[in-house]
Image (cartoon, rainbow, N blue to C red; front, side, top):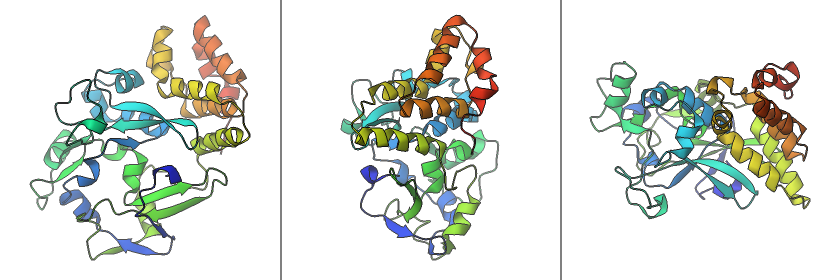
Length: 298
């Protein structure tokens, strides 16, 4: 989370500090208000790949990034952040029965496309709904594959664009959040350790890319080529399919981040190598090249 998307109700919190929270209430009593009545939710490239791995994506026929970005009513769109001059993916919150031509900004009763009745979530994952769950409770059908920003909630993670230093804040999703209004308290360190599959370490691969990009922006460099490459990598499967490759040939996350890392620094040799392999029909040589696989290894 960066300054450009802060809402004003964030409270800084340290690892040894506590906040009001009850996991059980979040699952069994949540009406999904934190996932409704907004237009967009900023996510990461890693989140996009995690959504593709979810069983729900497979169930509804989403097999590539193309279906996320290019459907008639897209689940994800790309917008440019004017503060940091970088293109960012967002989950689009549509109203039920959305029609083309009405942007989320002008549509009433928006909600996250992955928010479903809790009983439906448990039934989809072939699990038993808790007997104490509220009949109107809502939940995320992506479960462990949901975006990191959702896994962290009600904690926001902030990484400085100049220093890269990681800090945290408490952000109450809404005034009637049953989990946040509980009398129970949890230490931040304990809460973070309980999260599955999120990066709470001092470094983030993509943030390293963003920092390099922003450093060049502040120095007056034109980063339009970088943003064009970044936008294409967000929808990486379109590049593959347009060159007659199946999505199974998608480069690893680290390989794609390596391409972006170099491009953010104004060096496009790795991107050009990738595109040459694509056009010549030997992408497997690029994917299995050890030099390309380990450009960023921390």
